[in-house]
Image 1 (cartoon, helix red, strand yellow):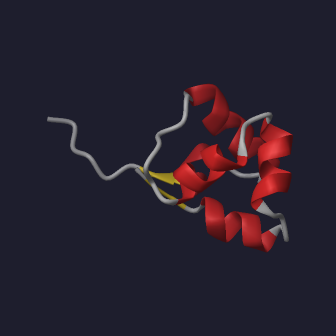
Image 2: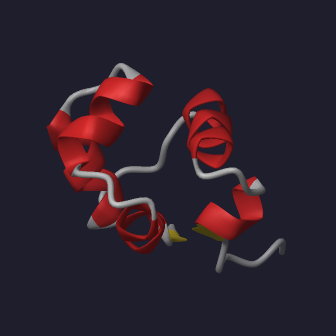
Length: 67
């Protein structure tokens, strides 16, 4: 799933380590998210949206179809 985590993180002048600490996850998790190799749990997605003061849809871009 595509996401804007790297862009949002840069807007907030936040390192991967800082974001990982706020989310209580490893830096490797942040790297995997940014490289779109990992889809987060709904709880982690909500936490990311809260940290960046936006909606989940502003963080993640769903490109699948519903069929």
